[in-house]
Length: 170
Image 1 (cartoon, rainbow, N blue to C red):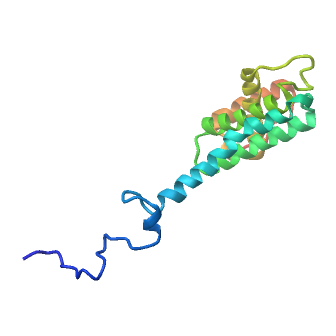
Image 2 (cartoon, one colour):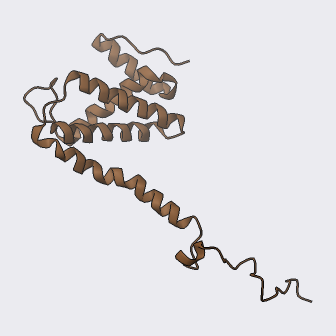
Image 3 (cartoon, rainbow, N blue to C red):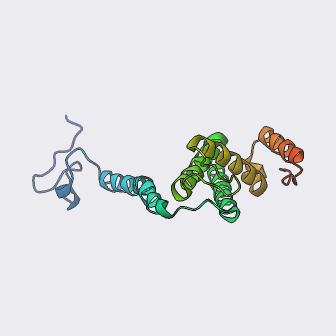
């Protein structure tokens, strides 16, 4: 005796899909495949468009002011804090935040910063500085999200520079 129930021809079997969605998707696609692919496109679109948007202001680019650099540092630090809270590795968090700021400075200011007069910084120099800024900002904003060995290096560097050390992590 078969374990499978015979279905009357008038009723769809559990595997048959009679929904309207079946008309626009292929037999090997789930209902979520279109929305997920659409979401991926939406997530990737800003990344693809970013260089184009940033290039638009390049003709009138002025060196980044100290106020702009402070804003960019805060943005990078907040991004590190958010990604660390979400469980992202510290090095990866800092690299992403630093790259974002480096690309922003490259695109909006053609790699020029008022604090470094007369020099156009390369993307590598911008990355190094942006990563350092992201680490320093994260140490100040969310010290608990910064690994202890990194906090020690930050505190030592700030002490050597004569700046105020960030709040100790608890």
